[in-house]
Structures are given as C-alpha cells and as structure tokens.
Length: 243
Ligand code: MG
Image 1 (cartoon, rainbow, N blue to C red):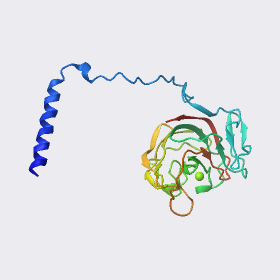
Image 2 (tube, helix red, strand yellow; image 1 turned 30 degrees about the horizontal axis):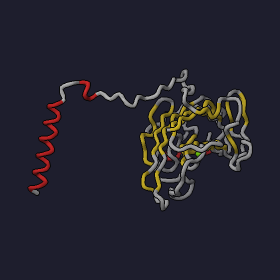
Image 3 (cartoon, rainbow, N blue to C red; image 1 turned 90 degrees about the horizontal axis):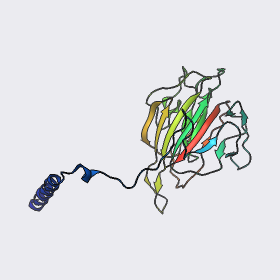
Image 4 (cartoon, protein in one colour; image 1 turned 60 degrees about the vertical axis):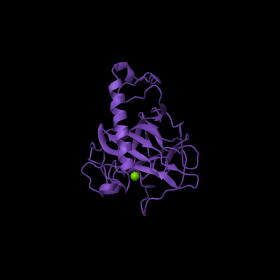
C-alpha cells in the first residue's frame, strides 16, 4: 500500500514537472501524418474516395443471392425490389464502412405493420438495419424503420411520409473474432436517418433473425445486401467508403 502511494506521488510529481517544462505552443502541435484530402460531393453525392455502388443506371455492382444477375428493376434513377426475385447483394465484399443510400417506400399504402414498405440494409450481409414505412404505422419498436432488427429500437422516429425519398448514413465497424472463431469485440453501428441520429454507436449483439436469438458466427468481409420482403421499395444514390 505504501509502495503504491509512493509510486502515485512520484508519477504526479513527474506529470507536474513535465507540464511545467512545456512553455512553447509548438511542442504540442502534431504535423505527421497529414490527413489525405477527400473532395466532398455536391449535396449527398459521393465524395472523391467513395466506391459508387449504384448511380441510377445499372446493377453492374450487384448480383442475386446465387451470384447471378440481380433481378430488381432499374428506372427513373432508382432500383426497385421486384417481388420474388430475392435479395440483391454487392459483388464486392466490405469490412468496416461508411455507407450512404436513399430509399423510398411505395406512395400507395396497401397494408400495415411489417407488411408496409418492408426491406432492409444488411451490413456484412447479416446485420439488418430495418427499412420500413414507419410513418403513422405502428409495429414493434425494435422492428420499425432504422431499428437494428429485433435488437435496438431507433432513438426517435425520423420517417418521412410514404413515397418520399429518405436517407441513411451508416457507420459500421466490423466485429472481431480470435483464431478460434470466438467474438472478442462486438461490431458497432451508427445510423443517421434524414440528418437525424437514430442509432448511436450501438454494439451489435449478433445476427438479426426474424425468429430466435442473435448468433455470432465468425466472419471476415462480406457483401452489402438489400432485402426483398415482397414490397416494391426503391433505392438510389448508393455509395460506400471503406474504413
Ligand atoms: Mg426488413
């Protein structure tokens, strides 16, 4: 105990001594390395170092679940779920990313709850950020738009009315697994919807199944995936920055 107290006093004295020695403001300036330059895009368009995944013209960056041609329709600068053709996923794999995309649920409201404008953005192919028409459409809170499906409800409901374009800006940091495949660090997600913070650096609990508990299979990089839940949800202006 005495020794601990002695060491604590020594370190405090050393700190105050060093602090007293710093009289030059330049002594605390850091010049190296210098952050590289990234040129911002106009509005929500891609910055200079982003990979553009969908610019409104074609599905070249996308495939279906089997790796064959993506079956969704492209028109009016958007890609739209074609019911029954299944998910679309990126041909490239990604780890931690900053992702921007815009989505629109159908203007015509034909059902309620989870059946109204349901789709989803899956990070690493397995962690779903819910896409749903949650404008005056009550469902379970951890399954509404911008929820981390069945794990975290959004901080607020930031939804625009059906038929309007909405933005997601997502920061995803991959989980880490040791060589035995055990998760040693959780992945995290931050989501900004229409400029409003809706998920603040949450720790992902695992996969986001409809039924059952999250699972934590070891994985490396994976595709970004968009869900076909049978509703004609549209997407546009999709770009990603690798982190
Ligand atoms: Mg969904």
